[in-house]
Figure 1 (cartoon, rainbow, N blue to C red):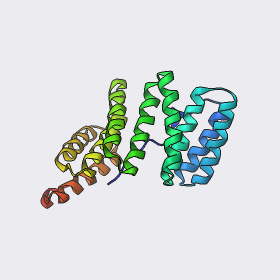
Figure 2: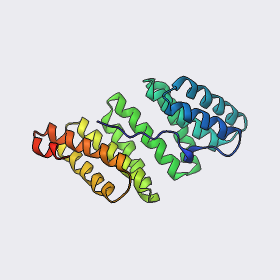
Figure 3: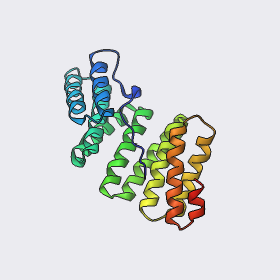
Length: 201
C-alpha cells in the first residue's frame, strides 16, 4: 500500500530570507532521504525562528521536523513536534497548513496502529482541504482514509474511496498519483479474491 504524507513544500516555506534558505536546505535533504542533514537544517531553522518569535516560521519547521522523525520511526518525537505545530496553526487559524499538519498527525497514528485516531485526523484534514478547494491534496487525504479502512479490514469501503479517487484523477494530468491509486485498487481486488478485476488495473 502506498501512503501519502505531506512532505515539506513551498507552501510551508517561512519566507524569502535566511529561514527560507534553511527550509529549502532541509527539504532538499529530506527528498534525498538524507534525514540527518534535513533534521540539522530544520532544527537550526526552528531555533532561529524561535529566537525571532515568529510563530509562522516556527510552525513550518516543527511540521518538517515531525516528518523527519516519523520517517525514521521516531514516533514520540514526531508526535511532539507535530502537536506543537498543530497548536500554532490552530491559534493562527491557517487552514491550509493546518490541514497538512492534521494529515501528518494521522500518519503517525497510522504507524502506531491507532486507526480510529488516524481516521479522525485525516477526516479533519479532509474537511479543511475540501473547504479550501485543493483537489489534489483532497485526493491525497482520501487515499489515506482508504488506507485506514483497508488496514481495519473494511475492504469494500476502502475500495469505494479509492475508486472515487481514480475517477477524479482520470480527469487530470497527475499520472503518477493515478498509477499509485490503480495499484491500490488492484491490491484490494486481489485481497477480495476478485483477480480478474485486479489484473485489469
